Structures are given as structure tokens and as C-alpha cells.
Image 1 (spheres, rainbow, N blue to C red):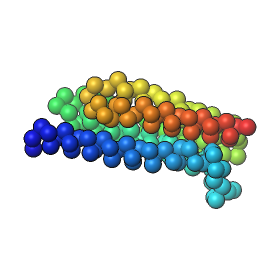
Image 2 (spheres, helix red, strand yellow; image 1 turned 135 degrees about the vertical axis):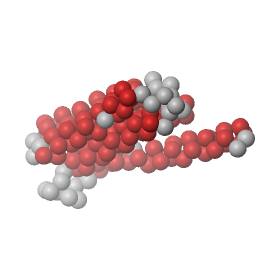
Image 3 (cartoon, helix red, strand yellow; image 1 turned 180 degrees about the vertical axis):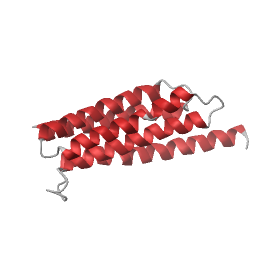
Image 4 (cartoon, rainbow, N blue to C red; image 1 turned 45 degrees about the vertical axis):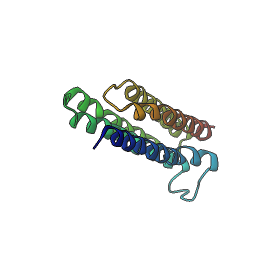
Length: 158
């Protein structure tokens, strides 16, 4: 594959990931705005948002683990740190979902998810091993996801 073909392929991947990332923001923004309550009283809308945030944290941790494994310099510290996002997401999801009857717990879990996503975003933005287009994409996606979670925390706690 020529350099021009490789650049074109990478551009196409970045464009597709941009669209997929934008669609991936819907579960962060829709539940608190629309107050989706189709599953009430079994599952509150805030739980839907919390569970999705945990899934995204797991995905992002997996991206970093895969990047480390497939790099020429597989660093064990990156592999170990890549396990933190899914574990933090799981713990916060457990608190938020099991405590859905207590609005403060759901709000705090959403704020915890906000902090975890922001921390993951900073880690990704500063990772020189990740492609530039991926790092550039992470900032707006992380910012919008965090906005959605903060709106959700305000709506859940108030």
C-alpha cells in the first residue's frame, strides 16, 4: 500500500470514528434530557446513563490495552492501568444502579463517571502512541459525554 493510500485509509477511519463517536453521544445526552422512563420502576433513566458510561469506560480501557499489546513496546504498566477504567465503571455502576431509589447516590455515581471519563480523556490525549486523529477526536467526545453526565447528575439529584 502506498503512502497516499495509507493516508486515505487513515482519513476514512477517522471520519467513520467521528460519526460513530457522535452517535455514541446519544446515550449520554438523551436520558437526562428526555427523562426516558420506559423501564420505570425497574430501571431508572439515570441507571441507563450510568450503565452506558461504564460500558464506554470499559471500551476505552480496551482501546488502551489493545494499543499496548499491539505496539512494538508492550508496556505492562499501560496494560495494568487499562484495567482501571472498567473496574471504576463497574463500581460506580453498582452504586448508581443498586442505589437508584436514592437520588443522591445516582447523582454521585454520574459525577464519578464524569471524573473517570475526564481522567481517561486526559490519559488518551497525552498518549503519543495513539494516532493524532484519535486523540483529537477524544476531546470533543469526552467533553460532550461529561456534559451529558453532569446534566444527568443535576437532574437525578434535584
